[in-house]
Image 1 (cartoon, rainbow, N blue to C red):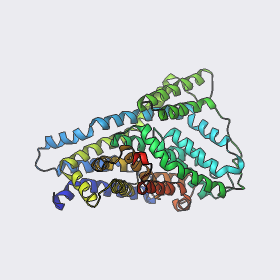
Image 2: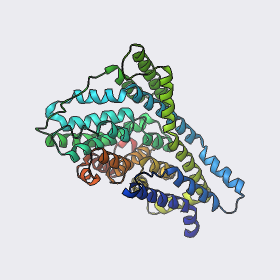
Image 3: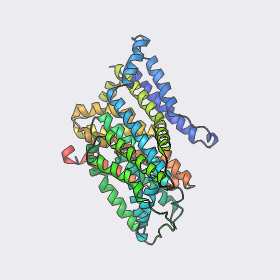
Image 4: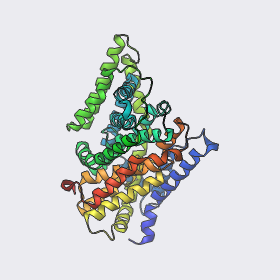
Length: 433
């Protein structure tokens, strides 16, 4: 295929990236604080453009091709997981599980180990609730200011720990997208991923231990409601044990309902009745609505690009000088990192390049589990280091800081990026390389 035709086929992708960058700049501009531009608009415009430039086909055939991509089997499975994850996360939060988990984590922190303890708390909470944004909201506000320490450093520790779960949790958007696009089990991806990032987390933990000598623990911690932490523990244990992710999330949601309704019958605070549970689940599913729509439009747009030869073109260009698994893995890492820098959204970055990465991996025999781990880890690394990412902006806003005050202390995102790069160069873990 000629460069001209290849670039035209890929132009919807370029348009999408330009729109997302423009939307991000517009939304963070202080003069437009009341205006939040939805990414769905960027995907809609790019999708319409993709259909419009597909020459040689009747409009009906172009729309059918788009719809085929938007309703692909692996994509629909991913959407059902989104629905269940939203239902579980919202019913757990409404039942008080997030607050209970935060209180539990803080209650077991020894005063002399407050920095590594805070990092561990953020890691556990993020793995449990599956969202870096949720972790930042749960513990960044107030906590960073409750201790006599550098607020930028304290906030950075929370943000770093938040990416631990964003990268590893079974209910994280990035994990769902990475595993579904690479066609591998979440439990298998977890094993590979943990082998790569846990050593990095241990080193960061040691660094924080040295830095935190002499600091004091938070002065006030609410009473821990241990029962409300149970759904997260059950989800974590059953997912690691290899249970089907949809069954895991269904079990977790039912458990949240049972505990929340049981607490309500006993007159406990922070609980709900049957219809309160239904309402919480509904809000969680609706909260996933934008991501579901984006995923479908991304699938449709990429199918149009593939039909026009754009996918093959970009793969040929990227892999022109690649002749090994190592080179293919580096190509996947570079691809997701570049798109993440442009989109400032790690889930969208993986959605955008996931199918392309799968084709590159298949061509050079890259293990699907390693490819999923590379996609997730490099996207989380970039997302954790860009000052205009939503997590960084949110943490900075809650702590009344500039993102640049937090950036110098973000050791964990940098550490997992180095660890993932070494894993590619040194062919680690051997079994998956």
